[in-house]
Length: 117
Image (cartoon, rainbow, N blue to C red; front, side, top):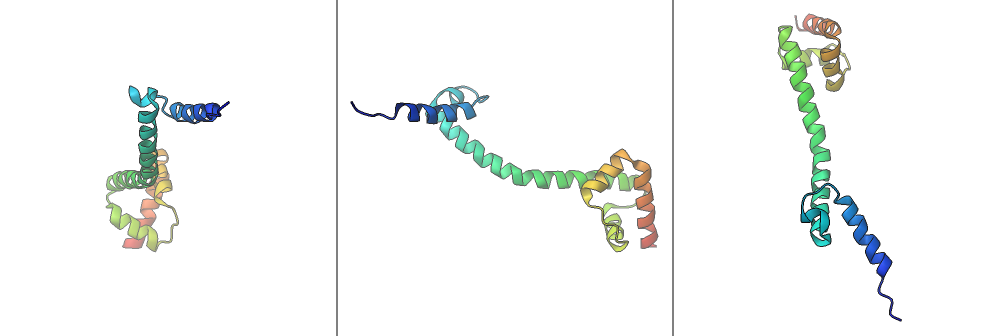
């Protein structure tokens, strides 16, 4: 009797098709197409894990800038003053403070303005 790798082949295909769940059309149902789609999606996932960090940083900067403008200071001057005053808050935490605790953010801006003048 000839061995044809039946279960191994089936398991390999099943693994790929399981990962292709949620795709549309043949990309979900056909092994060869699904395999290509999975490979491409892995490439995009790798790329987007890097881009996610950039996107969030720019989001935090936009939020801080908006909060700073309400207090009458530009983002770049605010960051410069923060660094000179040795306040060691990163952009993520500054953004969260600006959104959730506006009074605390006003105090930080006040300290920053004191350093500039």
